[in-house]
Length: 149
Image 1 (tube, one colour):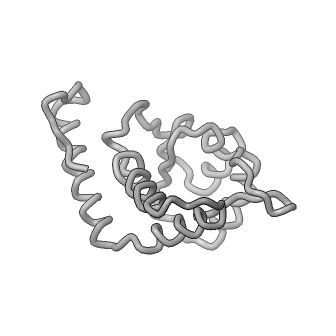
Image 2 (cartoon, one colour):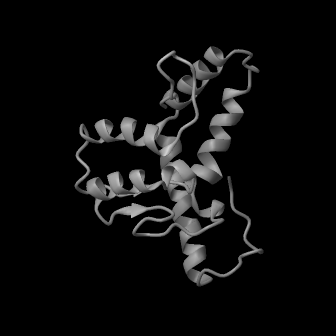
């Protein structure tokens, strides 16, 4: 995780400029030739500068609102970050009720560092089963399906 701070060290919200200034140098250290990039529809993630940076790096291999492959709106049952990761991290981060920003940040870093590969493997298997249901229903509503979280 990366916590965005201003020059005085205060935590700040993410915007397109901050994201681009941080993310660009990070991408220089990664071989992305066979990678796809997926993000949610947060405004700073889909700002023109951010999308331009991603296109320069990933070409057409971007799944995002305003990107070459448009991620379906309101698709929380199909997005592992939404149906699993954020809830998992949040439930563990707030378990001991952090009272300071430093404590909260330490909890976030700890919880993410402790995520085991086997857990991520199971999430990916679950994601594949979700995609099979969507294909079988041709993208239609699936009210009878109960997904495991």
